[in-house]
Amino acid sequence: MTEASTDTSIHDRIDELVRSNDVVLFMKGTPEAPQCGFSATVVKALSLLEQPFTAVNVLEDDAVREGVKAYAKWQTIPQLYVRGEFVGGCDIVREMYGSGELRTLLDG
Image (tube, rainbow, N blue to C red):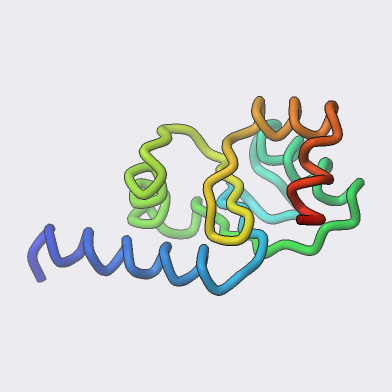
């Protein structure tokens, strides 16, 4: 398999996850055991809002870890998607949570 076709298949995998789940969090670790403080912060915000979400542990697959950065054109993890749209990383989610905008988006 060529690198280009690998990139395409990873992009397609990520696209399928993002489009087939209302809320997806690409994170380091799992919701029960986040492996970085930024991921833990986003998990906590979603949990406080009692928002179910699909978590993808990027530490389990380097191709997904790098692929999601290219997919969103965003170089850091975690990355939150709501109804197929990229929301942002930890700082953006934290600000949106604090202002109430995250609740509004999730309820949308």
